[in-house]
Structures are given as structure tokens and as C-alpha cells.
Image (cartoon, rainbow, N blue to C red; front, side, top):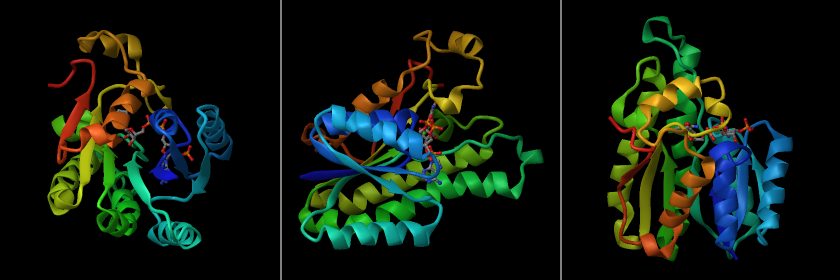
Length: 242
Ligand code: NAP
């Protein structure tokens, strides 16, 4: 049995990634924070792919909680390890910096950047010992380009891009690859409030992307076929990039 963990797997892009990895034969650990009902929908979809999974509810901003959940899993699976981790959990709390609250700043940084550390650090040792691992971080166009109204989000994603490049160099010799996937506008709850009709005029492809399109790229990066790709940031944005 091969194990993959997807943070923020209850909805949107994370759900599509869980389903993609299930189709590749992974037993999928579906992390989420609040939404039990949606997480169960993901689990059902994973099972419909002919694989299996389990819910792994915890808040990635809470290091003690993440550590307890992951060490509990490792203790109950002494002969197995999580070979793929997709750091997908993320939130937006947009505001101009002039008006930004501490909570808007720290909430976004704690989820998108500190969450990566809390989840990945405990899993790394086994990947290195077993000499195979895939760490895939979901970042954003906002973290490459910087977007006004998103200094918190751009900082979280930009920080995660830099962490991806640094960690990739620490782990490459042990066949542990570390890459980032940078979506543009993808149709999920996160972009539900945006004016798609206006924004799609800016996108060369003329439409928002679908979560499944991001998941297909993540699936490739997780596969053995991507073994020589590491430290990369791969955009998926319908041609929108700068
Ligand atoms: P979404 O539909 O809003 O779903 C967010 C997911 O993250 C949910 O599963 C949520 O769990 C989980 N989550 C949030 N905070 C968490 C925490 N503290 N601990 C654990 N889980 C947490 O978002 P999405 O659009 O699929 O985005 C997924 C990722 O892609 C994010 O990192 C986002 O920044 C990035 N991204 C999205 C777009 C886009 O256009 N949609 C573009 C670029 C990048 P609950 O269901 O329990 O709340």
C-alpha cells in the first residue's frame, strides 16, 4: 500500500488531487480543518476510484495538533510511510496592507507557509530513509507576480516557493523531489465571489481552470515519470502569467 497525504483535501483543488492520487493507486489521507461533510464526499470519491482513504482532520496552523495526528498515524503504521505529501491547504483574506489586521496577516501566513513546515517536517525523515518521496506545494500566481490586495497571500505563497527551492536541494540525492504548482484562477469555493465574466477577459485561454486540470499536473509530479524534476515552480493558469 502506498500512502499520500493531501492537506485541504475536503474541497476544491485538494479534493481533485485526492481523487487523482486514488486513481494512481494511492491510499489517500484526506486532511481538512472543519468540513466533515465535504471530507466524506472526497472519501467516497476516492473509494469510487477503486482505492481507499481515511480522514485526517487537523488544523495545519496548529503544530501540536498536526504533530499528534501524524505521530499517531506513524505509530499505528510502523511498516509504512507517507511517500507523497501535497501541501494544498490555503486561505485568502484579501485586504490592502494599509487596512490589514494582524489576524488577516497571520492567518494567511500560518496556513499557507507555517502549515507546510508543520506537516512536511515530520514526514521528511521516512522519505529520506526510504529514498523516495514527493513533496508538492500548491502556491499561486500571486506568489510569483505579487497581487495588490494580497500582500499576505503573496508573501505566504512567495515564501513557500522559496522553501520549495531550498528544500529540493537538501533532498535531491535521496530521490525526494520538491516542487510547487502555481495555479491562476481555478473554479472553487475560493474564487466563487470573483467576477469570472470580467476576469476571464484577462486570461488568454478565456476561462477559469478546473480543479481536475491542476490535479493532473500534481499527479504527474507525484509519478515516477517526474523523477528528474525538482525545485521547480510550474504555472497552470491558461496563459495568464504576467
Ligand atoms: P478551497 O476550495 O477554499 O478549499 C480550501 C481547503 O483547505 C479546504 O479543504 C479547507 O478545509 C482546507 N483548509 C483551510 N485551512 C485549513 C487549515 N488551517 N488546516 C487544514 N485544512 C485547511 O480552496 P482551493 O481553491 O481548492 O485552493 C486550494 C489551494 O490552491 C490553496 O492553497 C490556494 O491558495 C491555492 N490556489 C487556489 C487558486 C484558485 O483559483 N482556486 C489559485 C491559486 C492557488 P475545510 O473544508 O475543512 O474548510
